[in-house]
Image (cartoon, rainbow, N blue to C red; front, side):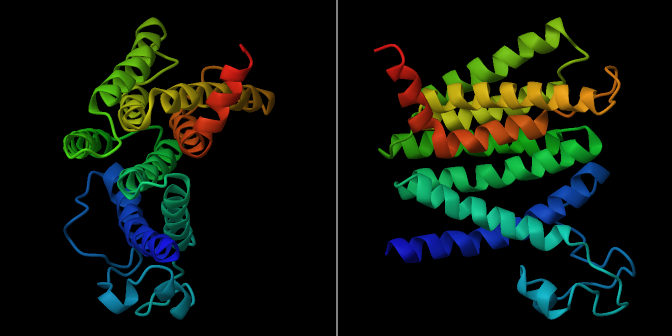
Length: 257
């Protein structure tokens, strides 16, 4: 049953990753992710169901459009494969299926936000705000159903992480964008529902890796006035917390025994 569960998470991850490729391409352009259907970016030819199977279609078509022969970006299968890996990782890290089922799409959305922010220097409201509502509703429903998730701790995580970065944004408007604040609020909500230690580890790792990234960027000649996307570091810290928070929190607590 465990192998079957991981396999199902991998399959759903591929499907969700295929959806995320649409989100990453269309949302920054202000386009709908629902309509029109998938089409070749080069010739505009509609992509049929058999040409839109995650990973397999790319391999079968050898990375080229069936109609015009244009090269299909490797980003598509990489996003699908990475999302599938994140889904399986959530299934492995969180033994309770409902906790894993909540965190898996959350990790996928973090990947999409990181890619968009890296490219466009924005974390779109069209992604984060609906996610906040959807995850809050899911956490509340699962908490009321007796699953090991805490809606109250989720709200505390949201206020702690999102509120903390909001104060930073007020003090240093050029150093922190409101998109980062909203993404931190989403991270605090979901990880807080798992346990507040997850939020603490995510915040520590996100800020640490963000600081190191800024130092490296400056060392490579980046101007101090250039905007450095913080979303990828927030996402990295949150993803790492999902897999390491119990160990890291236990190690930290052990230092004071």
